Image 1 (tube, helix red, strand yellow):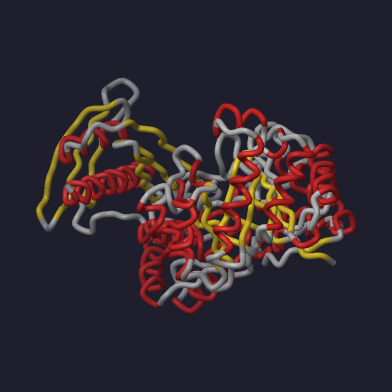
Image 2 (cartoon, rainbow, N blue to C red):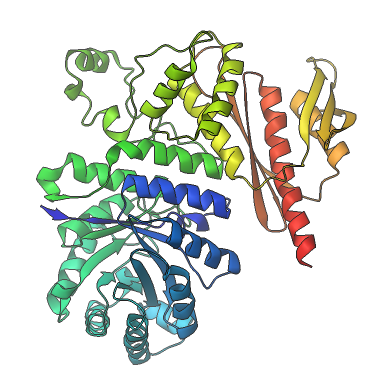
Length: 514
């Protein structure tokens, strides 16, 4: 079978989603997940955009060894120079050059004539080729471009050294039949097309990103550009987990394969969701909570008789492992460590020690610990490690609330910072609001918006862990905090404190830079 390369752009296109920005440590954590997942290409960022983007592309290029690392660049010398400087330390660096080719974009965005676009594309691909052999050329808004013009620009790009040609559906406009025809047409009409790998990059504005990408494969594309969980601008990009499992499950239709380790899909998905402070929709394909759940009686009967009656793939295939081990307060470190490793996590001894300590704390509050609880403990610990929080920031000492349905809630909070304690009492519309108001009295935060406050139960039962996510915005940046506890007020307080400490750390760095 032919191999389809998986080009992951979670760290570039995915991060452009509102509220999904990441710091360097978070990007490195995702890059390591992608390497374990065995994606072929990691698009680590857009190096010219900012010093932060340049640093992240450079660091990921020097960290990842089993994937090609790419940086996006407009068809300009300055962009290409920055991209090369950022990726030159990679085991297999790629420069990804793009220019718009649709009449709409050429006239109103580029303000260039078609012949000027052809000349610029050829010249800049040739310039990028001086730095490395692995050059990708993208014709932005390809699906709204004239097919003959698209064939000409493809031919010129290949003649000047492009080894991958990407024909993206930039605005999610096309349909599966059109995408397949576009790939087939350009491959047939662009001289030298056999020298390049054709790629698709589809957006989900009409809900067809996955189907359009797979149609491109049927048309001869051998690279799919996608993101974990379908993150991306507007309605998002093609979801990696969807196209990979579609190819894996329906090889009779697509007759291709990928090198993806599908057992790493679930963990990668959870890592990304945790970092951006979101959870998978219940009905999200492949990774949603209900993806392998059966409630209808006829379905349950069929699955009990033979799983294939209603399951076209197994949970284990995507990394959801059934728990055969019951863990509780009497479980030892060895059993705990073994289960963590079975769930796909590799932790240092120090990380195991800290997670095991938190596990024992949870055991005092819960009778049985589920896989979901263990994953929450590990990912919560990981999130705290990679979030840029001032180690000398505020931490919770204790809190006390008083609330009812006929009086105003009151909360007293005690925080510690550098061994000094601070206390405040405040009213609020419920105990959590009162707790946040008390924290504000102590910290006196900068003006900020409160974007997201969510509470998710980790497992079944009234003693379940509550996983709280708080997102606030200030200085045109988003700061995320997470808290985990069987007490949702405690989890909420810790989540809010984490977000506030991240904001404080950012402001301190900005002040030092002035």
